[in-house]
Length: 112
Image (cartoon, rainbow, N blue to C red; front, side, top):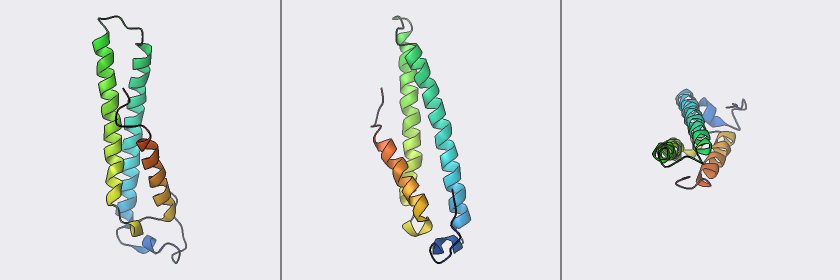
């Protein structure tokens, strides 16, 4: 997250809550990345099992359920950003949060 140095352009940077907000956004991003990596790892197992026989199908279905659960967790993390007041973020941060929300919205509620 890049921080601007012009205090007149970004008066929020002088706010006493700024370090806590930066820590929260960093933690949220790290958690979301971890969950997305887990989701894609499950996607690979689902893809590898696309020709599974009847015995293996419940396992593959479990992977699908787990992958969708990871996506819901990511969406929940990002949804939490809605409570951050506009004046607590730089315009760049707000733009990034908006683009992440739009990308996740394009995924729909369930992938499988």
